[in-house]
Image (cartoon, rainbow, N blue to C red; front, side):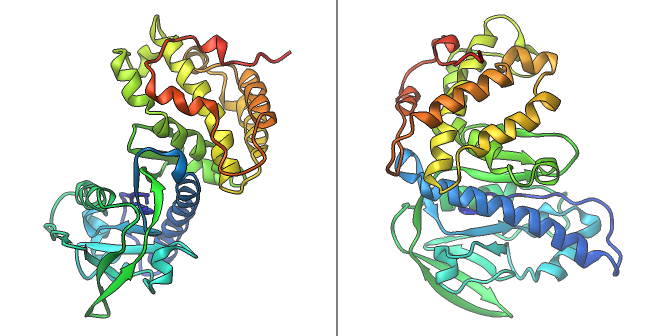
Length: 335
C-alpha cells in the first residue's frame, strides 16, 4: 500500500506550517485516512492473492518517509511521527503479520532481510521517490517466506521476524484534494481523499475497481494497443478499448469484494449514488460505459458468483489476451 500499506500505503505531501495548536490534529487526520486506505487495500490484496499471478509479501505496514513531507512542515512531521531513520511506520494493520510480530506505529524501519534503506537528504525537495524505491524492494521479496525487519524504537535497534501473507502486488495511495481521483497503472492504486469524505461507507468499491485494473494488466494491454490517454481517451479507436477495460474491472471487482468478505452489493449502492451526480460527464461518458449499464452488468456478475471463496470469475483469463475492443459483448444493458 505505498505510504504504502505493505503491503506498504499512501505517500502524502503536506503544505503549510502547522501551529503548535493544530499540528497533532492535522497529522493525525492524515494518518487516519492513510490507515483506512491501507486497511482496505491490505484486506483486498491478501484475500484475493490466489487470483493474482503477481504477488508480494503482505506485511500489513503503512510506511512513510520524512522527505515526502514538504520542507515547511518536515521538522514537525519528524517530531510528531518520531522518525529516527529512512522509513517510518505510519500505521500497522490490525491482525496483520507485522502486528503479530509486535511492530508498532511510529517505529522506524531500517531494512528488511539483506536490504537496507538509504537515508535521504534532510534538505531535499519533497518527494516520494525514496518511499517508492524502498517499497519496490520489499515488493520484490518472496511473498511467502519469513522476513527479518530491522527496526529502531526509542533509539534502540531491534529485529522482528515477520511471516508475510501473500498479497496481490499493488501499492495503495490516498491523493489529497477535492477531485474524485481513481486510477491505477499496473503497480499503484490511487484514490482521492474526497471519496473518503463523501462516500465513506462505499469507498471500498472504487478501490476494488482500481485493483481489478492492475490484476487484469489493463495498463499493459492498453499500451500494447497504442492508445492515447487524457483528453484523447474518449476519441476514436481509444473508446472501445477503455470501455472494455472498465467493464472487465467492474466484473472482477465484484469477486474481489466478495472474497474479502464485503457484500458485493455495495458496488450497486455506490454507483446508484455516485453515477447520477459524477458519472455522466462528456469525456467520461465517451470512455466509460453509462453508469446504469455498469450497475446492470455488476448485478449480473453478483448473480453469477460462486458460493465458495475464493471466487475466480472467467474474466480473469482475459489478462492473458490482447484487448479486442468488443466491450458490447461484456455489457449488460439496463432494460
